[in-house]
Length: 249
Image 1 (spheres, rainbow, N blue to C red):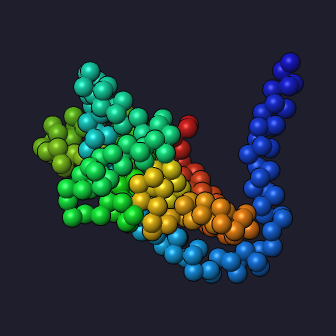
Image 2 (cartoon, rainbow, N blue to C red):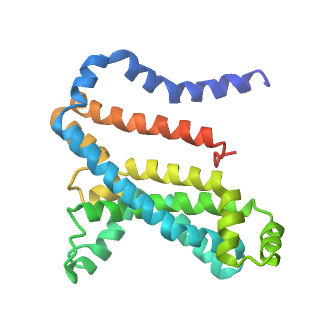
């Protein structure tokens, strides 16, 4: 029975690897490179990049203090707050988009303000932030959890205030985990589809363009856009591994 363990694991591993290998071996690299210069691919890539940078920035600015607070508190309020943070991770992205649409759509806050939150870049950022920012909060909290509280207490005993302690002790010690969370959040934002399609749809991001190209022109038209996202995914894995702060360890 013990001999079956690596065999069973290898079956699932092959299931992960084979589709990527088929993509690499089946399609002509020259044709793919030519397709990558198409206007619709470039526009989708620029939209995804700009929106992902925006949503990642929001996640860091607001998620960092939230993660630190969650790390230092264990009461009922903190437990409820952590549940709210994790909720977008377990919700189907399409459902997340529907929830956002009820709040910021034409019949919600979007109808009461001059901000165009649907069919706009701002709507794309809003959808990506909702789905991707929990990755940063959860990863940053884990990084803060690994810091010995005595080190922060020692810093404060030496005359450093909270800001000084965060800058000189807490953040440097948590830096690998924070960077890993940042990279994962950016990658998740780049790959977000369901919530973005429901809330914004235009301008098209890479995942939305993949769907639109596949529906209208088939697999060959969608493939170049998918290659860009595959490159982002592989780059994310390499960066997170280089940081030696993978959250699954």
